[in-house]
Amino acid sequence: MKDKMVKICCIGAGYVGGPTMAVIALKCPKIEVAVVDISVPRINAWNSDQLPIYEPGLEDVVKECRGRNLFFSTDVEKHVFEADIVFVSVNTPTKTRGLGAGKAADLTYWESAARMIADVSKSDKIVVEKSTVPVKTAEAIEKILTHNSKGIKFQILSNPEFLAEGTAIKDLFNPDRVLIGGRETPEGQKAIQTLKEVYAHWVPEDQILTTNLWSAELSKLAANAFLAQRISSVNAMSALCEATGADVTQVSFAVGKDSRIGPKFLNASVGFGGSCFQKDILNLVYICECNGLPEVAEYWKQVIKINDYQKNRFVNRLVSSMFNTVATKKIAILGFAFKKDTGDTRETPAIDVCKGLLGDKARLSIYDPQVTEDQIQRDLSMKKFDWDHPLHLQPMSPTTVKQVGVVWDAYEATKDAHGLCILTEWDEFKKLDFQRIYDNMQKPAFVFDGRNIVNVDKLREIGFIVYSIGKPLDAWLKDLPAVA
Ligand code: UDX
Ligand code: UDX
Ligand code: ADP
Image 1 (cartoon, helix red, strand yellow):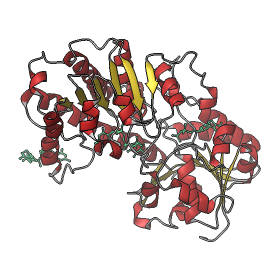
Image 2: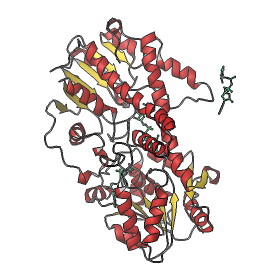
Image 3: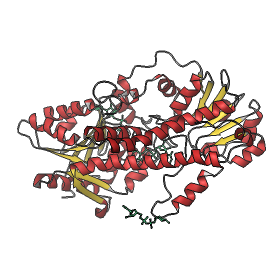
Image 4: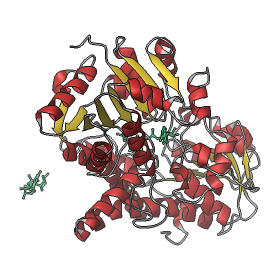
């Protein structure tokens, strides 16, 4: 069975679909994998030397398989028609209007993909939910498919992806687990088995978990909610640390030593970002409310509230320590991506921080090693939740934000600046020559470290006034009124 020729098609060549399919193609040379997308520029980029996403190790994998058993195409219908297994990895934005606006997932892209699958299919297929969707989406999709099936049999599976950006290839090579949910019927179990055999090419069988459809869908939302909750918990502690003189890195180290808690995902920060955490929690909240569970909904809402609080707190701290005004002052922003080793800016805390500072009329000079100027300008002029509509549908920003300059060097960004903010933990920021930076800044020179990567004592020795999340405050800042 392992060597039977299976054809896979993945609809959606994004951050999830692209790397996941590339790794399946690498690990299963006998399986033909086609990744399709309606976005022509995206597919062209996948077929070029300049891949549309930056992900360590991805280029090597794509180079090895592309043209062999990995293909990128805009001919969506042809590849769906030919496939035995169709992964659906399209975007699921948060609804911006109508019922559930600001919370519920917008399944427009999903529904149109499902209708297209029903339309073009002439043979039985397994349809795999890969993008995170609300619990019971599979049921809705199943209905669309079976009511339009013309006698063809579809089996729906939920196979949520747990990869994190920046480490996608590593995570795909060595996943903590692969989760496959399906119907508890003989046909459902057979479909689960078929997909399991794909992953079994490289994942040990005991790490491939099988569940019913709803458990698989909910597990993905739950996992992301738990992870985000850890960050909000440590970020809440960071505010208390600043108020009491404790050091959050010492606290989280001590807490993480408890084997029941564990050391990972306890880094205090300016706030979590990324395309998943907020969206999935909002989704979870909406599902709870719809199911008459307001207390549970309230509980999870707090995770987002603390995240918003943390971003606001950072901006307020900055403004209040710079004599309550940043108007016309140059502030350097080091890092714009939502985490290091990615060029992705979806829901990055940098957007909120920058917008907050722009609201106070600061001039920003932004440097990120992987994010383009176009992207930064677009992000700063876009409305909340608009980011997850495919790029080709997004209106380009009508005007660029004039208070914002984007430069290609940290030294250039900080030249003549009054303050500098570190918003992404890029490794290169740890190695900066801070003496040189200090010499070229206005005085007093402020550092606001939103990622706790600088050596606070060393910087204070140079002469900087330093604020680092959850660390004992600089004498300068201690005299100021508390910020919230
Ligand atoms: C706790 C801490 O574990 C310990 O480190 C600290 O020093 C004192 O407080 P204790 O209260 O003795 O210890 O027991 P613990 O095992 O933590 O259980 C506390 C409660 O949580 C119990 O009612 C237990 O039944 C409940 N619990 C625990 C759950 O409901 N679910 C779990 O998964 C774990
Ligand atoms: C997350 C999940 O980790 C992944 O399993 C899921 O498939 C998709 O969502 P991702 O958003 O790519 O992955 O990155 P992640 O490493 O989880 O970071 C999310 C955000 O949390 C980033 O902004 C990061 O900087 C922040 N973070 C993470 C912290 O602030 N502190 C931490 O300790 C860890
Ligand atoms: P993720 O992070 O979940 O991978 P992305 O937004 O990066 O999300 O990718 C989703 C991709 O799905 C986009 O490239 C978008 O163009 C594509 N897409 C959306 N709807 C369809 C569709 N009906 N058919 C094909 N591709 C689609």
